[in-house]
Each structure stands twice: as structure tokens, then as C-alpha cells.
Length: 152
Image (cartoon, rainbow, N blue to C red):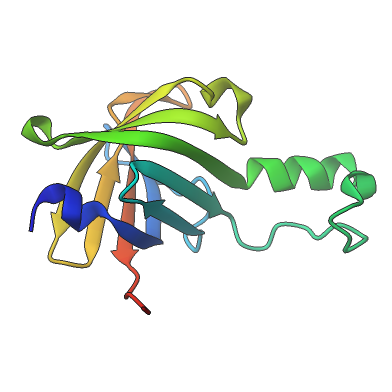
């Protein structure tokens, strides 16, 4: 099975960690973060991740966007990552390029997110961001995903 065929499908987050060059680690959405990514045959990627336990708003109506306090809205925003994009593979370099269309962070729109990929067996996908400064220290994000079984 080719790389593209292995990539297609839905993947559930197992872990999201920042690995710093000094050996330290940080879990930006908590050690129990949850998430889902989908790679489609149409070349579309969609992904969402969140911290568990974000404060609930006082009202449960999706139509009432202004129902949370500033602190609740900030916690909801800071504890969530979401975007969708078109993607393409560079198999020679084990890179999947995400050409962001839209996302929770407006600055990501129109941006290229480069992800180094690796597979562990048939059911694990590891995505790593390039090295960068994170919180003032050199490191990189590492996300481990588990393939969800096909239902249909």
C-alpha cells in the first residue's frame, strides 16, 4: 500500500507533546488531550484537538455565542485547535504539506503547515512540525494518531 493510501481515513489523537531540544517535554493541551484528523481522497485534511475539562458556559445554546465570561471564552479558545486545508505529499522527504484554507487561528489562513510523517505499523501515524522556537526554546511538536477502524 502506498503512502497516500495509508494516509487516507480518520485518526484519533493518542498524544500531543512538545519535545524541546534540551530533553524537556510539555503537553500544551494536557496529557489527556483528545482530537481527530481526517485525510480524504479529495486531498482535503480537517483536524481538531482540544484540552479536556474546559469550563462550560452558563447557557447551553449554540445560538448564544456571548453567553460565556471573558475567562471562559479565553479558556475555550486556548484549549482548542482546529483547521482544514488541502494537502499534498512529498514522499521523498516524508512530508505532508497542509495548505491551510481556514481555522480557529485567523493567522493560519493561507499558511503552509509542514508536517514530517512516519507510520508505525498499520494503525499509527506520527506527525512532527519542523524545529522552531516554542515558548522561547527550540523544539518541535509531536502528535501521535491511531487509525480509527472503518465502519462501512
